[in-house]
Length: 561
Image 1 (tube, rainbow, N blue to C red):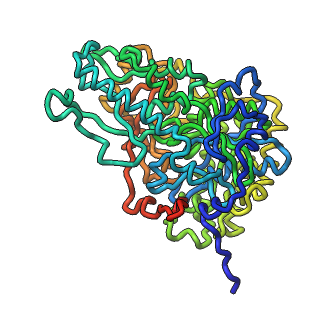
Image 2: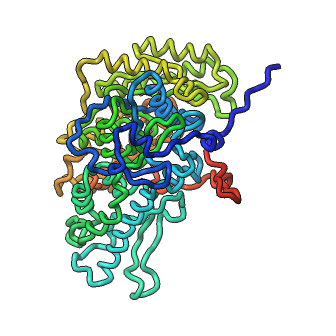
């Protein structure tokens, strides 16, 4: 019997990386010592001046995926591996990724630095504190929270209604006990008692603002536009009314600068901005993407979770505000994820089950259709796992052919860039062949709020319609009346289903999307539509990843994945 190959863990592979000094990575992008600020030997901030007077020459490749499953799809791994492969075939390529949150790192999902031989490094530093961007965002957010309560304590000149404060507090750890709290207890000296709550930092509007801002001036302006709640007359109260936009922006002075690191194959990677496309818009920053496009021939970027979430928001929100558009979309799928969508439980995925793969292809089909609704070409990347059988893989390849979609077997986890050469060649061929962009937004922002919600629900999710709570209807009327009805929408929805019910896998039909609330992110420039029972503060599982993470006496971190 052949001896099974023992694969090293992600962090073991990362620890063996042959990293080069970050100045050499910067030099690959034409950056000088004046353009970067060192955070040690292997991390740096990039000056915003780099973008001045530079055209966006790079072709943009968006990586997304089918509906996620507990089996994992390997979207970040594919993104990194594809960029490495692009460089292997002689294309000057840079990665633009979002930053990991501590919530998943210590929770159930793990980090967001890729895996196997397609990782960004230093992996443990990127997954944990990195350059402190998320901490700065949390500080700016909570400064505002403190300022609101302080204003009410000292006379409340703006007549803020304590029952109509939208602004919560944040922490970048999954902590379900903080979802609903009461602040201001203990008597007059401790403030005004009111209900409040926490959400995870990466879901903060401050994160969205950082990701969509293109300068410090733009950042400060957007922060000033944040609506924190209502006064007793029902009028919106902004950060500018409180006068805190300057101090919040000051805390974000360095955080707004994109971060430069490298892959295991020394491919430049610009990592900046927030994850969580289920409860936020889930894209890396506009500045990071534009810098990559200005400094390289090709750019590979990623949108969070499935194409129904991250890709839709990338295209309808980020591209709309940034004035950019992808040249090609890579849709990641796996045989084992398709088997789960076909009804197989996670513990039974190892055995061949072509029938389940065929059943699960309905999910892949829907995501291909969704990408095409935006007028974009798609390459299906089948992220290969050791237990996949040839018949299962052939089934996916044949299906893609029937859909007239390019398909490539990706082995970037095991082989790094070499395992993605076919994928890279197919992506380049599509981009070179496409003479004219057919890109279009899914909806016009001048449509009513309900019409925009219905468009996404019906066209992207496959719903039969939308159900609204009384609170959602009240907020839709209120936001329309106050002049915010023409903003794009950011759907907060479970990532595990095309519907708002996490238990409905594959391609569900005969369902309606339930909207519980609609909230305003005026600074970011969109409305957040809360569907189903989506939580903006996740909880930890019974055995969180934190139980496996440790540090040795000489300072080496272990247990991250």
